[in-house]
Length: 366
Ligand code: PHE
Image 1 (tube, rainbow, N blue to C red):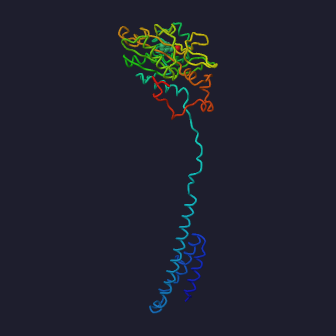
Image 2: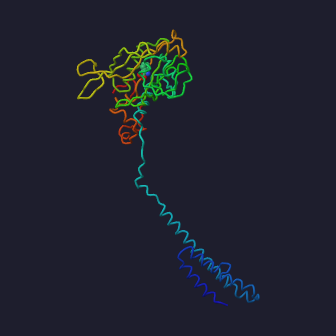
Image 3: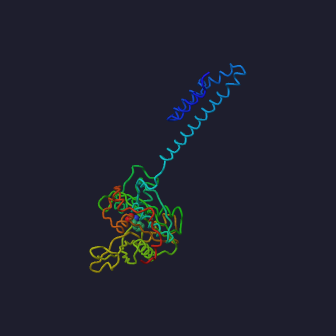
């Protein structure tokens, strides 16, 4: 019969000296596992006489309990040390600078479209849209430019080979004016809309790109006249350029879809070598800047749009969004708008959190 006290002493010393959970587990198997030495001692009890068993069992059971307790205690120590270590290593240092995230910006064209939509919404205009791949009929014919009309040649049109449903070929719309026709046909009258969007012409230099942006305006009612057009343009330009110094010149012009047609110029003055809005336009050192085309909607357009021109009349205008952006924010090369150079966007772009509000809009004085 081995001396259980000696076994216990040795076992406890080895358990205390075990360095990690794996070493401790090996000791547990060695003493208490199925083939373990203490388990073997337990088994010897079965072969003993009752007297012998009564005499020896307490020491063996005491040995087993003591070793099992020591292993459990050591294991608990290892577990809590592991937890401590994890807690320490998983600590977040909230004072570390966060990695920089790339932030985009709002393109000046989007910004100006938003500004215009806000201003015209304030004047009671809804936003209408139409397709960029357009039918010849909407882009030209319904706007009083029948097939052989010379004004068609003024638009350097991109045509598709596909025939259009209403004659001619499909094309990339050359202006937003077809939305006039589409909206009158769809919604009837009265109406008050703007139609912002992309338009296309085969043209490219510092102030022309094959794709550019326009906003169309259309007001149809029973008694709309040129005075309404002038007031609307004046009010919109004051709000857009954030100044009361807006002097307009309405110049007789020609568009097949308006009659009379007026080209609208805005007066400027040269101050310290820079153009500043205002002034009389005609005085020395002053000048006129061409801004947009407009006029009273031609009766034939109203008729082709399904309305009775003896009952309904109104005005329309079309303005270049990119050009407005260049004037307001001072870029001088239109091509850079569409190069997709992030440095340009970082310089000229706008914050998405700094969108225009009407507090600086219609009627506000600086
Ligand atoms: N569609 C014309 C253009 O692109 C502009 C315009 C619109 C003129 C509405 C008059 C009325 O040049």
